[in-house]
Length: 371
Image (cartoon, rainbow, N blue to C red):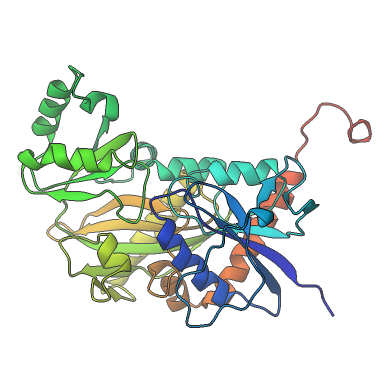
C-alpha cells in the first residue's frame, strides 16, 4: 500500500483574520483527497503559539476547525530540521499555510518554513510580502503599465497628533481625491479595518480604524465599477480561470458580507462580461501575478468601470479564502478544476518549487566538501 503524503494544515494565526482561517482550513480539511494525503492539523493561537491538534474525526458539517492549546503538544520550529513536537520531528511532506493576513500571508511563515526546510503551498517569501503590501504591489503594477485604482499612503507617524506632517498630507489628499473614499490598512485582508467614507469629516475616524491593524493606511477614491475577481495558479507557467463577479448587498464587500451575512453578496460565475473583456481580465491577472513574484495560487481583484469599461487592478490575495462560499475555489471549479484536484495541484506546485530551489548551491565549495 502506497504511503500517504502528510500535509500539515496550518490555521488560526496571530491575525485579525484568525476566525476566517478556521473556516478556510476546515473546508480544505474536508476536501483534501484522503486516498493520497493524510492531513495533520497544527493550530496557531491568537498569541502566535503553535499546537499539534488531537487526531480525532471532525464531523463533515463542521464549519470551523477547533483549536486546542495543549502545552504538551506545543510545536517548535528547528532550523534545517522541520517542526518538532513531544521531542520528535514531525513527519511532514509539505505544509499548507491556510493563514490569512498578517503573520501568515505576508511572508513571515513562508520564511520560517524555508529555514526549516519544509516544502509549502502558495507564494514564496517575496511574492507573499509584496502582495500583502497593497501600495507596493500597485507601484509594481503601475511600473509595468497596468492600470490600478489610484491611492495615497498615510503612515501612522504622519497621522500622529504630535506630528506637523498631517496638515500637509491632508491637503495632498484633498487636492487629489474627492469623496466617497475607501480607507484601509495597507497590509490586511478580508476587508478588516476597511471603511467607506462619504465626506472629509469622517476621514480621521476611518484612519484611526485602519491604523489599528497596520502601521500604514491607504486612501483610495471609490470606483463606480463592477467587482470582478480572477483565480490564477502556477509557478513559472500560469493558468487563469473564468472571472467571477461580486454583487454585494452591503455598501461594499465588507467582512460581514464575506463571512457572516449569508445574503451579504451574490456571486456570479462566470461574470456576465463579453469574451473579449474576460480574456483581457485573465491576461492582466496573470501578468499581475507574475510581476508580483507570486507562485502557487492567488486571487486577483479588479474593478470594471461601468461608464468607460476600463479595467483597474485593485489587489491580489496569495492565500485567498477557501470557505464554502469563497470565490477562489469556486472559480477554479467553474473552469474545470474541482476542489480536491485544486488542492492536489497546489501541493504538487509547492513541492516542485521546493525541489527546484533545493538544487541551488549555497556554498562556493564543492558538494563533496559540504555537510
